Amino acid sequence: MFNPDKWHEIFATMSANKLRTFLTGFSVAWGIFMLIILLGSGNGLENGVKAEFKGDAENSIWINPGVTSLAYKGLKPGRPIQFTNEDYDDLSSTKNMEHISSRLYIWENTTISYKSEYATYDIFACHPDYGYLEKVEILKGRFLNFIDFKQYRKSVVVSEVVERALFKGEDPLDKYIKVSGIPFKVVGVFTDEGGDRDMTRVYIPVSTAQRVFNRGNKVNNISMTISDISIDESDNTVEQIRKTLSQRHKFDPEDQRAVFIWNALENYKKFLNLFANIRLFIWIIGIGTLIAGIVGVSNIMIVVVKERTKEIGIRKAVGATPWSITSLILQESILVTAFAGYVGLVAGVGLLELVRPYFTEAQNYFQNPEVDLKVAISATLILIVSGAIAGFIPARKAAAIKPIEALHDE
Image (cartoon, rainbow, N blue to C red; front, side, top):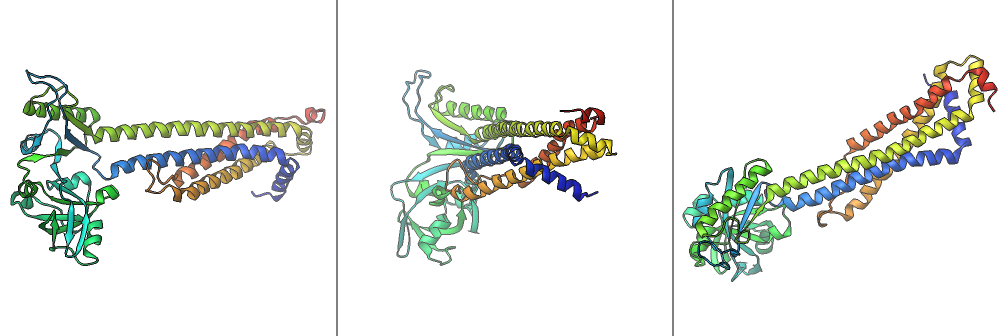
C-alpha cells in the first residue's frame, strides 16, 4: 500500500544528503546516457554504411575487365581484356545466378534534348535485368524489356531528374527525345535510392546502342545478382566466373588484375557481421557503465544503513517489522535509480534528436543516429530492477539489525 509517511521520510533523508544523492543519481544517469549515445552512434554508422549499398542489390556481383599481369600459355602480360556479348552469354549459365546484364557507356556525346531543352546526362546501355541490379523504382511506364532488346528498339527510360529538366511538367511517356542526336521513345520514368549519381542517367537497350553507336559486340562490364547463399558459396561463384572468363580470354585464372570482380554480397555480409560485433561491444561497455552506477547505489545504501543503525534499532524496538525496514531501503534505492535512469534516458534521446538533423542522408557513412525506443525503455526497466537488487543487500542487513545492538552502536 502507498504510505505517504514513508515517502516523506525518504525525501527528507535525500534532502538532508543532497550532494550524496546527486552523485549517486548522476552515476546511474551517466550510465544510461552513455548507453543511449553509444547505441545511437552505432546505428548512425550502420545506417550510413547501409546507405552505400542502398542503390544496388546487396546480392550483386560486378565484373570489370582489366589488363593481364601474368604470362599465360606463351601470351605476354599487359594484354587488355575486352568483354563482348559472348561473355554475357557464357556467364548467363553461372550457378546461383538470378539476374544478369552487360553495360555499355556512351561517352562521346552525352547531350539529351527535348524540343528546346538541352542537358548533359550519363547514357547507360544495358539489358532489361539491369533494373534489378540498380533497384530502380519505376514511377511511370516501364523499364526496358526483352522485346526492346531483341528488336533493337530505340526505347529510353529516364530518371525523375531528367524528366523535370526536359519536360517541365509535360507527360514524358511516348514522347521522343534525342539521345546523342538520335531520337529515342520514352517508355518509363524511374527513381533510384542510390542518390544523385544514379539519378543523372538514362537507360537504353544495349543491343540498340551497339548498332546505333557502332560498337559492334563490345560491352564495358557485366553484372549479376545471385541467390541468397553463404559467403563461401558466393566466393565459389566468383571463382567460377573468373574461370569462365579466363578460358575465353586466355589469361591465368590466378591473375587478379585481368578481371576485377566485386562481390557485394560478401562485403554486405561482412559489414553486417562487423556491426553485430560493434553492437555487442557497445552493450558490453554500456552495461559495464551501468553496473558501476548500480554498485555505487548499493554502496551508498550500505552507508545509509550504517548511519541509521540506531534509528532502525529504535524502530524495531517499538514494533517495526523486518519488511517495513527492508521496504524503506528498497524504495529509496529504486527511487534514486528510476529517476536518475529516466533523466539519463531523456538526455540521451534528446541529444540524439538534437544532432540528428545535422546527419541526414547527405552525410556519408554516418546517417540518422537513433536508438530503438523499445531498447531504451527496456534498458531503463532493467536498470530499475538492478536498483532494487542493489538495495536488497543493504536492506536485508538493515532488517537483520538487533535492537539491543543498534542502541549500543556509536
